[in-house]
Length: 122
Image (cartoon, rainbow, N blue to C red; front, side, top):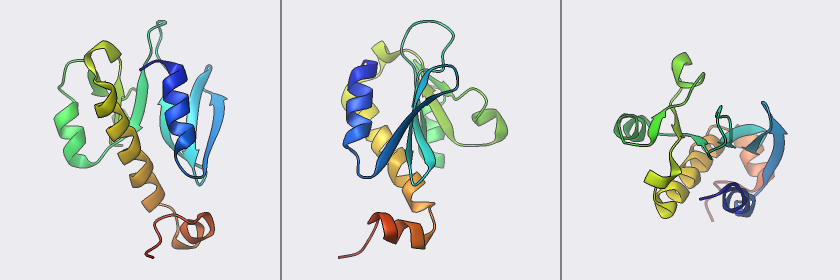
């Protein structure tokens, strides 16, 4: 997945916002909270960072091409960075980005979730 596909995928998720910050990284948010970061690696190769469940964090942290996210994971947060996208299947990465979005959106206040039309039972 390249940065263009990453940004297109994240933009297609409901009520997301995009900012460029932290040294030119593409930062995607839902309800003002970060769920995905594209960039944030010292070299030119793509890197994607996302929030995970505890189980997915434990599984991914030792997989080739994945690592606990610099800065975030060292502070006890369950964030993973894909630093070698050649080892990550695109559909798998999309799954983890979608899961990060879901986890972050569920962490928003119920009032904000309702205002944004997120996680509502029909």
